[in-house]
Amino acid sequence: MMIALLFDWTRYPESGNYWHAIRRAVFAPGIVQRSGRHMKLSVGDVLVGIERGQDPEKLFDALFNSSEFSFFYEDRLQKGFPTIFGMVFENMPRELGAELHEALRTHKGYVGAVSVHLDYGPHLALYRNRLPPEYRIEGTRLRGFYSMGNLDGCDDGDLKQMRLYGYRDIGWEDTGASRTILDDYDTPRHFERVAAFQRLLTEGLPGGEDGAHQLVMLLEDVNPRLFNALGAAAERLNDAETEEEIAQVALSGRRYLEQLADTLFPATEAKRGKRVLDKAAYRNRLWAFVEDRTVGDETTLLSLGREVDRVVSEMNAGLHADRPKIQIAKALVDASTLTANLFAINPEPVRDGYFAYSGALRAFVRDLIAQRDRLDA
Image (cartoon, rainbow, N blue to C red):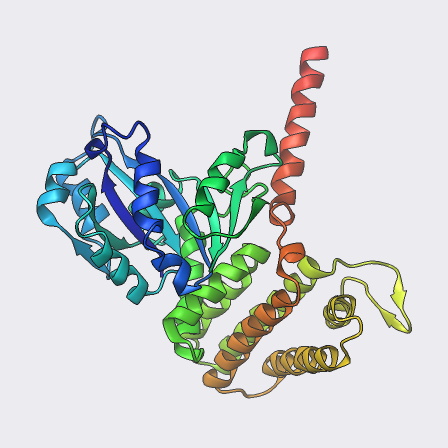
């Protein structure tokens, strides 16, 4: 799940930089590193005061009493509110959150931990949209985030400091247009779709909740736009009763596979042997993606290629035949699992922080050109 560790930043007057003191408290014990869990971390001030017109009681309740996972030291929270600093870990298991909570018990500035639910407006506004992404972490591997190619703003000393806490493989990662004004995937409606699909995965994946959260994070890395089709399919499936309604779910699933192919291997007029790779040939393009990343590994090529064929066939069958809901649900879960397997071949080149935002980028450039032309007129 997504778990926020919360701190009263007024308790660190002697440190000079409370983020450094808090970071040391969280990472020095080595709990996060030993977990090996693949997570993303965002950090920043959740609250710095009460703004005009805000109801303190409602704000307190929304931020701290609206989570399914909640551990607090009530006296510290009452004293600290509203000066709250947050470390929000995406894809953190409950057990790891509870272990960190216990390890931070004696740390004077720590006030507690809550699960964050981005389909809930106050959580989205304060735990995500206000906090910039900081790190991608996995075992002793760490990448510091920077945005829109702005490497000049990166501080190598920050990453070197993380070596003191056991991180050996360190570097930087461009998050592209995510979390910028060009990000259209930061609305409650988007995260309602994500949550609907996550519930479907929780029921269908062997890893349950933990597997669902990890897969959702990986899909967001590939392209958050994919959740438009996936979330629509999950929402429709929940309410579907007739054959036609179930067929609409399968159609959303096929659109997802088409969008996945667009992301991994964009359409081209070129051919590969006798196979076309145009917009309609999304199955061929998924095969081409696998071929390009499994050169010399015939076993992986055939295994993933057959899975592409199976999932595409199963989804298409749902459009034309009487398929029970449970079978369509399994096809959707299989499609998302296939995505993770494709992504795992070579994850870093697959991540593209710009592809999903290309429309917003083009619109932004057109607006700039139009403003320039008006000034020159």
